[in-house]
Image (cartoon, rainbow, N blue to C red):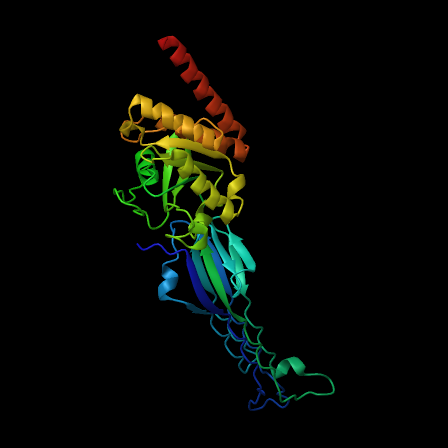
Length: 354
């Protein structure tokens, strides 16, 4: 299924039904009087966040959504039926913007969340409504009120706990495929990943969602390469795992390039907790590994994790580090205690081996 994270749609709520002008005329009924019913209310336009969707591709094939008009009132004081509502079903994490694509209407962050984008028009009053002691045969009724219409933008920002960032071919997709059941495309050329991928990682009974986005290159915030359009998908994450490939000639420069693009994008990414990791270390000998580790530590100001998806080295440690930060950010006491218990057990096993 093709990935689409932005769509423009037109919505229109239903008009209210018109009131009826009717008079009761029956044989042997001397005083009939007005009996025109009210019109029904027009349908609303709703948006609902549902589970099982991770793209807005459905809105490429349908961009117009119109609720039904209320049924007109009828004689014998019969009120018209209300018009049917129409519901736009979107993935969790979808933001709805006004036509200017800047004014936020609603952020759909919870499964089952519903929001009314357009209110249906009220039905008009029938002539029976206007009967008074001084006007017992009104011969007019109200038309229904018009519904609302507008054009809105849907913008998807995936809900994930941790995000993977780095240059193209930094090993992000390989990392995702190694620790989750996701199967992103993996190949030895730049920009293998053309759209974000999600996967669920499990470590010590704790599950969290990982998001892998296309690689960033210098000038991405100005549209170079794929640009920074997919960075919105890691805005909601608790922590970023910044992968730097050991195959880079200058790992310090590679780190700073991506870091600069994150800062230029903004959106709070520059302030998120960051774990730095040197990936694909299985291609280096001991001397080269030590040298590049020191270079990356100097550039980032923190000791990097050493990872190899091929041999599995450092993968468990990386997942536990991600988990600990997610747990701390969520303020989850129970999971933090569970994490501490596993960490204590690992330490005891390590001491026992020694």
